[in-house]
Length: 197
Image (cartoon, rainbow, N blue to C red; front, side, top):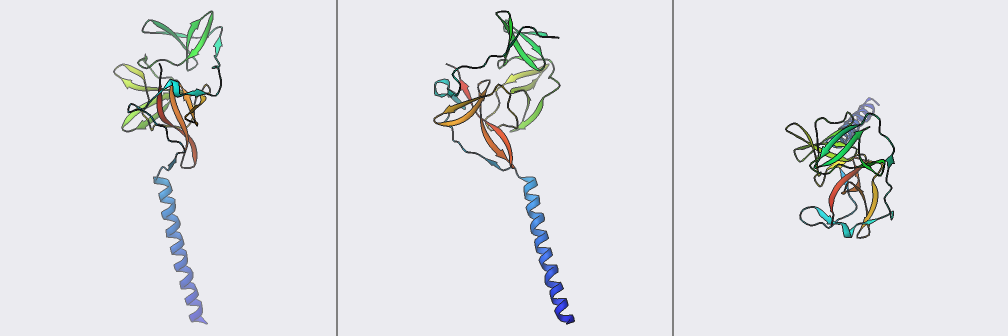
């Protein structure tokens, strides 16, 4: 009876050890890998650009957000164009209203807005502010195009669904995103830049 008890105890201990080591190994592999699953395959030219003629917007017209006034606005001039900054957004003045716009590549600001996300990709540090990517330069931050493969976890509310070659993507400020899963979490990967014609 004692021999049977010792044998069953030994088998139980070995089984627990094998199960415990296996579970620990799996848990560790989940912590150290970023599994990204993709669906689409976008054919781009060598600059990661796609012609705007290939892009079909789901809505025929873009919804334009305009307001009559902006409290506590700051005026920033870039290449002769006045941008008005308030509430983490940029506006331009048109027909008596302020229209929400995305600043162009090359636009510089001295400090980042309080609410921003720091992204490191391919040894480059980007700062994402509501869909606009900045890179730190000598005396401030400059609007740049993100690198293909950069992952973000949120898109701006003004993002539009587009279709290219029958596949669905998301576009904001001429940057194309594809919905992906990163470790089971929904994310968006930069897959290209729309080339305006």
